[in-house]
Image 1: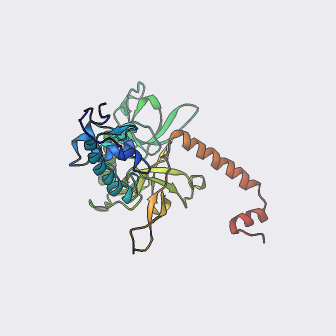
Image 2 (image 1 turned 90 degrees about the vertical axis):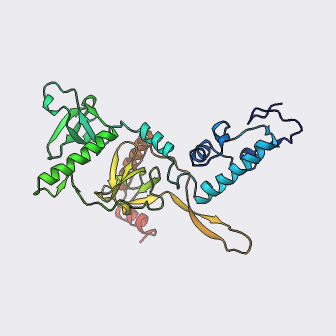
Image 3 (image 1 turned 135 degrees about the horizontal axis):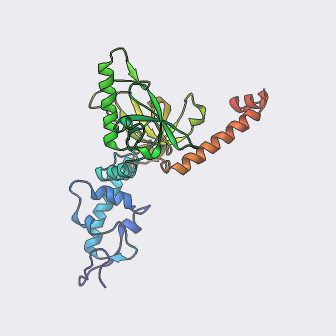
Length: 314
């Protein structure tokens, strides 16, 4: 019978169960396979084979896949898993492509297709809030002027994001009396070599805390990028994006026990929890839970609130 991995039927071979499926616990995932396949020097078989096989493979494929299994353990899982690693270029491109044109709160957009006010066409702006009834976005221009625009007349992309940042800096430079635009400082870079904090890399899931807008506390988000000018992280909440300080974010990490080896002490290392990134649906569910919790809290008397806050009746 032909080997399911290489397609060959070598004579006299010893058939072995695929180590990536039957020896690795849990089995190798598609995401882990793609991550290693994108790395420099990855074996050629990773372009022709799949991450795991249910049937036995030939001895040659077994040996090559043993090496891949070792890489999964040392290069991915020993470092906290894919959520903790800086995503490969391919994975980042896939994520960015999926969200490249999303119209979200606080994101930049370009106006097009206006008839009566066509002088606004081609201008970049920032999305403030969307009216659910009219379907129009309130947008803000770099000079602070606001206008309501239909969603069909707005376009978002990475190029537009860059145009907006350039327009903000240019406006601030030509208007010395204006130290800030849209509430954020301009021209305060933190350096070109700013390193990512552990658990806050692009794609990492985080949780919000200690915000003045109480209903946002406890919401989960996904780190998109670090805004050097504002000194804040851009976080996708599923239904909007926000620029947040690091002290308002909790990384999606737990302490996991690791036993290094015989004669060495047990240690704890941060590892990512199995939490999926937010979507529009989960964001809506979180909003509904927050609203229900607000109603419940308002119905409590002073004694009940004290008991919940301090953990005892008194």
